[in-house]
Image 1 (cartoon, rainbow over the protein chains, first blue to last red):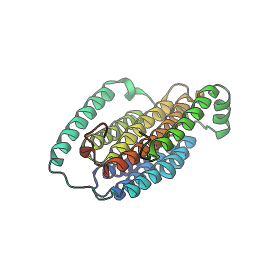
Image 2 (cartoon, each protein chain N blue to C red):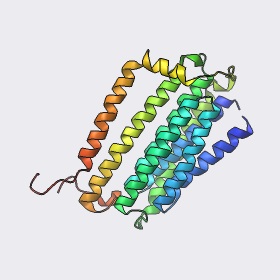
Image 3 (tube, each protein chain N blue to C red):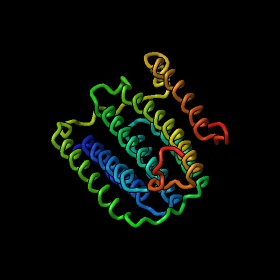
Image 4 (cartoon, rainbow over the protein chains, first blue to last red):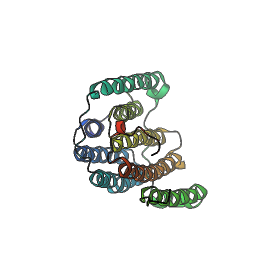
Length: 166
Length: 103
């Protein structure tokens, strides 16, 4: 465990926790972007350059912007106050802490401690392109179909229904 | 602690943060973001197992992560479209106010 990993993990956890805990939704998305940057840096540290830059492109350039658009369109940056909000937090945090305890117990009990770092590997984007076009060509096409269907579906769902149509 | 275990623990922690947010926030947009966080934690697991696995040159983990990111992006688009539709209907993105299935 290196100092780089500790710093990146701290940045990621801080960003994600702030994204879930802050009150103003715009601040939440900004903190979320910080968390995504930390996660992309962790991917880069793991030698997965392609996934790291995909993470930046898709999540920071796409999902975060989309979330900001949704917040501004629905004018819900300042959420309404709830009387029972503390009860929700207690229940949600208790469930999440239980899940984390089980996962940590499973990880510590598994044989992953003995696994040493393999030799440094270099994965050029060319190799990923060959893999996508040869052994993973069917999943790639299915992904294209899924994205098309999802985009059309999102437009259909978000289109206003005129009176008299239903 | 070995590097692989620390990555797995970090991923478990991120998953728990996303789960806590998705369970306790009352804004539909933040619940969606919490689900995205859980998907990201799973991606970190995939990449860590690929890096520390016996044969990293096969690229299975990278492919899995790329496809998972694609599905997550499609899910975000459809989810935010649904939130816009619900906002048009009930003038709110608060989950506690969405109590009717129709009308």
